[in-house]
Image (cartoon, rainbow, N blue to C red; front, side, top):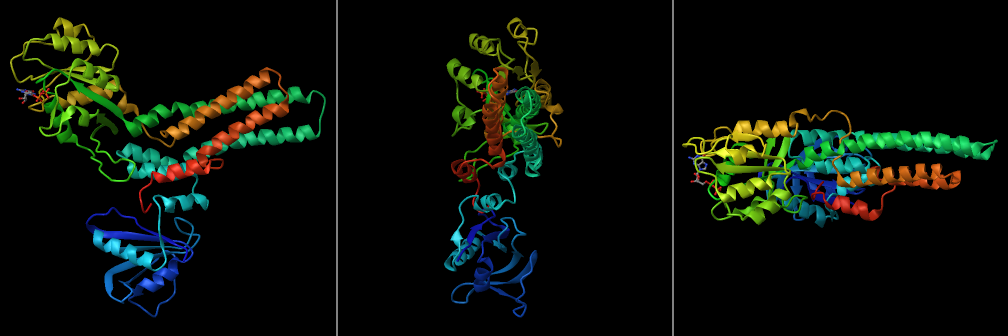
Length: 457
Ligand code: GDP
C-alpha cells in the first residue's frame, strides 16, 4: 500500500479529532476500514463527506465518523486524501490511526503532508515555511504576516527579481550569438543597470526584516531591582492581566514554556523567568549585580524597579548605572505608600531615563508603563500590510548572500572582467535566491525545515 497517515488534531479531549491519510492507495484503505451508512453509494466524489463507522479487523465498531474525500490533484498534498473526523478523544484517534496502519498505511513523519505539497509543486518552500509560522503565531500581527507569505507575496517578489535577471541574461546570450562591435561595453552597461535595480529590490526586502522579526519574536524585557522592590509583584500583575499565551507543546518548535504580554500586537517576552524565578515560591530570586548585568545585556528593554517608599541604597545606584547604554524605564514602585524619593531625586533624574510611577501591588499605573513601552519602540506604527515582511533567519541569510553576490558582480564589471565570467557570478544570485522558494535548495535544508513541523501537518 502507498499511503501515509497521522493524527492532525492535538492529542487532547475535544469535540472532534482528525486523522489524515494521503497517497495513491488512500481510498483502498478507507474502503477496508470504513462502512458508510449508505452502503449502496460506492461513488467517491472530491470535497464530499460520508457518514458511517470505522470498524476494526473483527468488524467491531470503533467510532462513528465523517470521512471527507479529496481526489488527486485537488487536495492539500495533490494526492488522493481522506480526513476522518472522529470523536476527539486521544484513545479514539490513536485507535483509528492504528487501524489505518494495520491496513497498510505508513505513519507520516512530522510535516510530511506539507512536504508532499511542496515536492508535488502545490506550494513553494517559503509558503511551506509560512504554514509553520501561521500555526505557531502568538499574535494577530504574526498571523497576518505569515498569511501574506502563505499567499506567496515573498515568493512573488523573489520570482520577479529572478525574472529580471534571467531576461537580461537571455538578451545577452542573444547578442553574444550575433556579435557586434563593442558588444562587451554595451553588455556591461546593461548588466550594471540591471544589478543596481536588483540591489535596490533586495534592500527593500532586507529593510523589512527588523519589522518582521519584531512581529515574530517581539521584544525581550528584563525586570531588575533590588530585593523587595516589587519585581515579582510587577511580573505577576502584568502576567495575570495579560497572560497572552503559554505554549507547552511537546515535540513542536516551541517545547519550552514562554510567557508573553502583548502590547499593540507585539509580543513582549519577560526574559528568562525560569532562570531568575524561584520555582517553589514563584518569586524572583535575589540576583546580584553581575547576574543583573548579564540579564540586562540580553534584553531589548530593561525595567528597573525601585521601592520609592525607601531611600535609595548603594545597590539601587549601582543598578541605575547598568541602564546607561540600554533602552530602559525606571519604575518608582509603591506609590500607595509614603514617598521617600521622586523623579526629582538626583541619581534618578540624571539617568535621563523615562520614569513611571506605579503601584505593582494595587495594579495602578500599569497602563502608563505599557504606553511608555509602546512609545519607545513605536509599536503603534507597526502595521502588517500586503508588503513582504521577512522574519525568517534562513530567508535573511539568503537575501544577504544574494546582496553579496550582486556586489561582487558589480565589482567584476568595474574591474573589466570578461562578460562570460561575470555571467557566472550573476548565475550565483539566481541560485541563491532560489533557496527561498526552494528551486535550488539542498535536500538537507528541506529535511531540516520540515522536521520543525508537528505531526499530522
Ligand atoms: P521582589 O523581591 O523585588 O520580587 O519584591 P516583591 O514583589 O516580592 O515585593 C516585596 C514586598 O513588597 C511584598 O511584600 C509586596 O507585597 C510588596 N509590594 C510590592 N509592590 C508593592 C506596592 O506597589 N505597594 C505596596 N504597598 N507594597 C508592595
